[in-house]
Length: 126
Image (cartoon, rainbow, N blue to C red; front, side):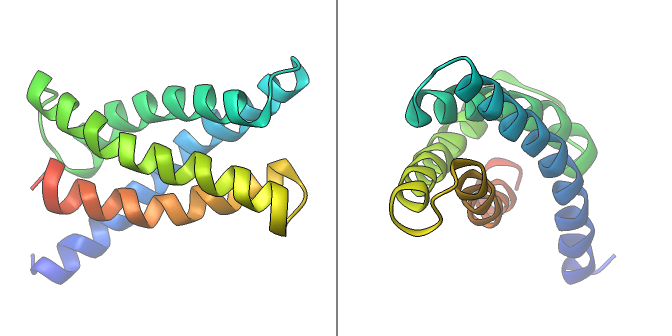
């Protein structure tokens, strides 16, 4: 398989795992808001749960690698950068551009998806 085709296949699979993680992220975020948490706290908690789901699925399904402590630590380091981007964009979009926290969170997830896939492909699971 060519490198380009491999990347397309991985990106497609990452989209599936990211979609599953996004369900956990948005669902957890909505539950957190309903429970009275602030936008920031709800975004943080839901992102952390989604990151764990994403690692568990991505390591095997997308990048076909064994789960290791080193891999998980690298994934968490990359996810931390994605986390900062995701939460910052959620707060910014909900405060200044989109108004709706759920719509803001969805937009932040889309942007963080591209960022996270790039880090995972080039650093974590290379």
